[in-house]
Length: 281
Length: 308
Image (cartoon, rainbow over all chains, first blue to last red; front, side):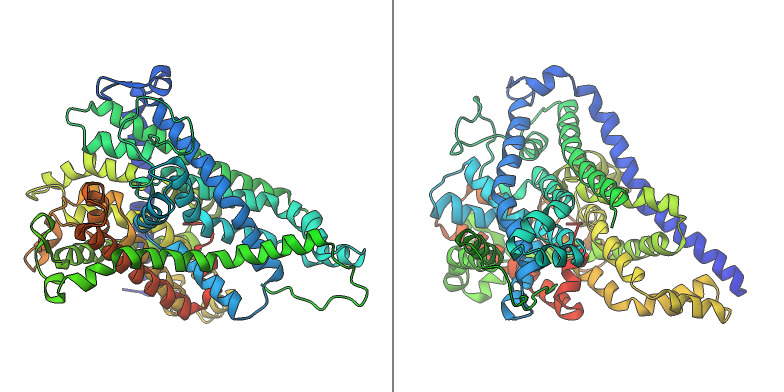
């Protein structure tokens, strides 16, 4: 076989593998949309479940996921952004900094079910928050920290050094420079990281299994110490634990969950792309 | 990145508010270390009895039957290993070749479409993939002739696609980092594009590709919900041979997820589930530590950046 034939064959083989990777992804999303769209209507999105969850809507699960995602943001964002500022602006090349970076890499690798165990041991039991929105939001918040810190630090580092030099040469202190020059320019990048982190949190099941999720609650939560239903756990429950569950409700629930996380993912990539296009430095 | 500079001689003096906020910033940085330590401490506190109360011979025995007091972890370790090995065999070639396609072959317009598709794949919740595996993929596998559709292979297939975003994005970074001069030099002396990729680009990107594989493995070992739904959850050790991939198995993660809801707090069973969590924590810690040692902690962190 000549070199040119090998070349042609290699390109064909590589392209074939790429098809094998990307086509199933598209197929899965289309399949879920086609199978689930029929179940989705106004009642499905806004009504309480009825008749052992086999009828009615999934409103409490949707609401629970939105509350948890909001709580995750409150827990995770301030500390993650401050940590990113530390790494980008203050950290010296010393042992503490290396330890922090190692810790972030490790946090990113810890399995989500282990976060669930930690949340159970630390927040539900030791801190006595019980199975509650608070315990769940703390667990999910800690889980999202690595991705938010990484993207925020990258965004801060992308702000040109001259901006800082000019600001400080005009007499601004280091913090004033960060607050008024660096952060405004890094904000869209930080936002991207936040939304990505939240989209992961919204779809997670394992960390909320033992910290917040309820099989079925007849009323909506009224405080952060209440349990709540949540979409990922609800999908797990209705697809494995409830016999005779209509398939259409299962597909519909999966589709609603996918739409929430995909909207957040696309929002994040959208923010990033539009910022890259507009960037004028 | 370090941006610490010596302040100019007339550096403005800081106000008390600034000193407070800068203290908070240092504290936030250090909080990451504190959290890792706390996670370890809590896993150890609740899980240590596993290793103290159960004789090692029994702990690594072949029977997982907690109701009668059998806590042999071997079936769970084998289950996790089978699912992981299967997923890696599928995902590594697919992921690296897809990265080659994106980086070296695909036209720009197609790349702009495919890269967001990878982020979309990364954004699909594992429970949604698990659900689809359960209702749609498992029946297909069963029709292929397996006695049941809920097997280690079903889990491997799902986990392979779930780890692809990690493997593809890190591999692509590694390929992108190979200097253009290498390719130009190779093409200039008459090598074809394929020869250049195979003999020049891939060897130069080797260490990055190794990281991609390792972090992909880390992702696979820790996955819970998808394997809980599709691997059949049978805590037994399949007979050795190719058929073992098509037997139902149960992984460590799925065991924690399935049983934690039913155990009494503080019971030995409860301790053992935390003990399994501790083992998982140590495995992923080691994988990440090794990956960081190989490329330096910055490389490992950067390459995980937007995709986790």
